[in-house]
Length: 478
Image (cartoon, rainbow, N blue to C red):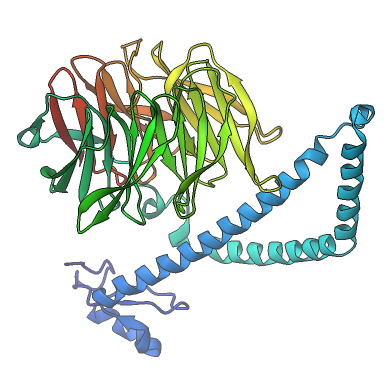
């Protein structure tokens, strides 16, 4: 690694080390001519190898702080959720309450009164102290030039890109492939090929078949690899809506549980970050929540949809789910800490139903209607906490779609949304000014296209009916 000193009088000398003293006012990368300026803290000079380790430790510290902040935010949100029923209560509703409801209301408010006399005062004092600490942290950080928002080192890498087809790595596949999933390190890929699941080793953009799983009696519509346990979940695309859990032993997968999950076909499977809950949707019009005990057991069913439920998406905070269905509804479903269950808090009526929906962050999601040339962007109103449509994004000229599956997917590290519509796979960049821009539109022979992008955004694997091929595309910066 060759770095040259930029000091005008140092004759373009090679950088030989780095200063990590927190109070040093001088340039941190130093050459031989710079050494006298660091004479008072020589013990804080380090090599490039040790600098990398020091930077990694610093990033870990920042991640730990971020985790603590997020955990505190979740706790605050849980507290706010407890307050919501009372904030929304209208005294004019009182005559309509029954005796038990009035009794509960009074008892709850008495508990609040008890808390106010002691705990709420402590909370207020802690919050005020926390504000002072936060303001001091912000003050110190903002004084550091390397953390300024206009510094390119802190901006996401938003260079122009393209996904290039690796032609020699395509695999001829006559059976329909409706579902694709990558394991946690993208070394294993599962493809649902009609009634069977093909397990591939995936290295350097090449697929090598390892195993074929044959437990499904219907075509496989959905696949999900767990990140912690490396287990695989698969769903039936027809018939009785079975879900199969596959366990791995030395990269050999075996069926560990079969669940008669729904009355009809499975359309979507997602999982929370802790991997102790997975959520399924079906053409039986329901959304089901499954908890891991000794086996996976259904804990709750949402029945607010009146037709097929196509896609689900879970927000970063893990407390909200959105769903889109054939009944021209988008549901916002939130977990209630008070009731210990998921509750529909908003129902959005749309003019045309769609197959694809995806959270971009906690306050924003995208929805692709099956008709038209536009994708819709919804954002949460900070006042009433309701999601409303704020933008329409033109995606491509093809204005109709007849096929579900191939879910929308947002890759945070690349600020990239994968959105299939009609005969195109649109790769849409979220820009730094909160706009959405179609960077690449991959066109296929027809709209029978299914695929998935790797979690790091490096690879896009698709199967389409026109080519009858499993195709692999790799991310390339222009």
